[in-house]
Length: 529
Image (tube, rainbow, N blue to C red; front, side, top):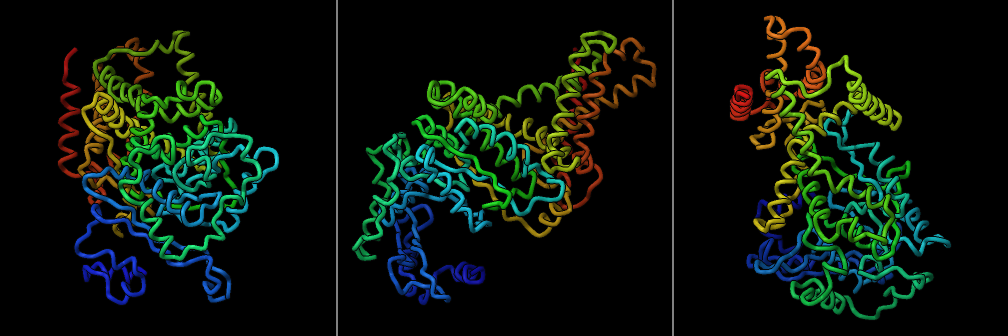
């Protein structure tokens, strides 16, 4: 398949034999582009055809190729728009009760996953209440110590199942089985019991051509005008994380949802293999989450008396990622700056008020480490995750916070940034060797390196003052907490310093980024108070 695709790309046209084999291809010609084309629907395999069998004689399922209509003057609503078009077309062709939603970079790993999901939907006591069954997002390219903190075993085994315990599992956009009626805006009702086979189209007598023509209408740009699609029906429009807000809306209509994490992983995808890609992806997530919190869909408002308080709080753990950047930025900037100036921020270590600060810091990290080790992480993987949270909150979350506030003021519009997963062999090799890739001039890397240099300069400045006799013992006792925290920040940023001053490979920090970070950090240290 790869060779066939590459051959088409090189020729810049689809060969005639392929056009003759699949008539859907014939509609892609020189007059259409990726963002300007008519709706295309082709039933490649008709599951009703008794002759549609594989090499072992087993019946094949219906397989449909669809490209929804796109026009420059019509909003296509990104992934949400594509999903809604697929929902409508599938309702015309099969109208099956259950829909499986998978991203293009994921594949099925467990052949029994469909049967297992149906066990939830068909449960005699509570199955009729369930709108969707969400599986965790797991990846096949996670390194031994999870370099970029993508696997998050505690997230999948503690946090998300905990929210699911309130009947409000988050819809994550992939690896999810949906009940069609709930996804199409229907409110929960006891009447949904026993409606499994009443609406399917197994006995549809229309020809393949008739089905295709009827489906094209549903995939056209104008179909949604004047309807509730994107509002009360299908995935909700206007949010970068349309999956989460859609799941919340479904739950507020009275439905429950299940988070299911089987030992035999159901679906596997590809995690971001570079720091730049990982941060860009997290920026979109943080932006979309915070946008939900500031909208009418805020769980405490939209979900009031509709979902449980625990579920509302569980949602906000993620919806408030963006503003969580502010306290960490304070630590990353004010702490080293005040330390360099000799200004204490915490109680003297001999004071009893020092005890609660020390207790919170130590207990939080011991608990976090123990939890990670219990659920299969290594110490180094836990440490990598702590580093990633520092990088995420000081870049992705902060940028998302600014973008969301600007959009709320009407100064910009919602955008959807695709996350690239394909990288060069050199980058892939670095990732497998667990070497962080900083080979980009991204503004995020400038922020990361500047904060790292600021903490390093501050720590070096204090050490110099101690050896030069510039700090008395009683003054130093007041600054111990800041020295420890600043030292931890320097340790966390070890790979950053290595990329700035030691490494010479393609993953090292670009010279322009290094120059800007040193200048900015130096100027910050020289600001008098």
